[in-house]
Length: 109
Image 1: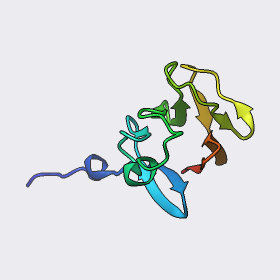
Image 2 (image 1 turned 30 degrees about the horizontal axis):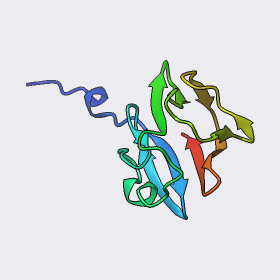
Image 3 (image 1 turned 60 degrees about the horizontal axis):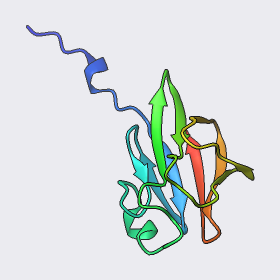
């Protein structure tokens, strides 16, 4: 008889991303932006959002976002400008303003 471990089927929860009233589940390595991997159909039409505006990472059990140095638009997390290329920890619910025309809610599970 083969013993099957249930640990191998554990699904890791994602980071909830809500934009324009729709919620998406993002995973480590996903990208928010006009050419991103999450909500691309929404961001594509917001010209003030960069093609690759925010990278999502999970490290040591915590969620982070990184705004690449190439992003020129103001990007704020809870009202504070996000330093470029510096991971920002996401715990609980946070508000990400990617531009004047795009506000996103991030919720870590």
